[in-house]
Length: 281
Image 1: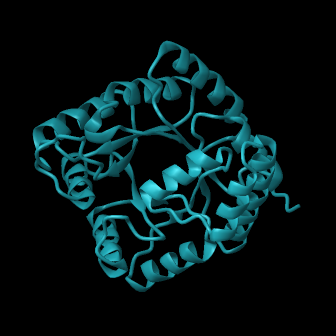
Image 2: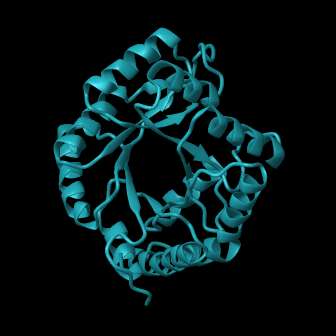
């Protein structure tokens, strides 16, 4: 096992906003279990069309009050410039200094895009409205955005976000390290030099992971999918196998020079703690 000093490989954590008071209490307990890992910051997701906006901001405020940096996801689909400007002012009033800027998904039945069609337009607007106040993270897709026409178009869209003023990229989760390293090489050849932080999804629930991955375009290698399906309902075997697979992926990313790791926690402490213990973080 490779061990490192604390924070030698920076980590960040992603949560989703709870929908009930019980969920909020559970998430508070989860965060307290994970804070000893010394995350650089925690991000909080945002529903389609901003449908969880209140829960997102409440969770971000709670994290900031606990003494940890926090970043709301902020999507622009269906938004107006006036509305975004108002929200940015609220972020500043709340002491928020980080934003994960996304295009976002249209909620079902929604009629149009609003005044922003692309995340690059949102990033440019944030910079225009607030200067360097915010540290802006944007999304990256090592295996290509599921709605992109082709890899070249996807790379062009990513470069546009960086040129608009993004500071760091967070990737969609993946299980193929080669896809990540190829993407980083392509980004460098395109003249982009911001850090590209790999997003990591712990494997804890096979059916849920397969469903998520099929929906978002993240490839599960055939041998991994076959093993997961072969375990059936044996949760212990799924989790032990998942820990082996994902920790090996993280080791390869670290050895290859990835600048840190962003864990998709699914509001659970155990899987991330187990991974960090295995990795010596």
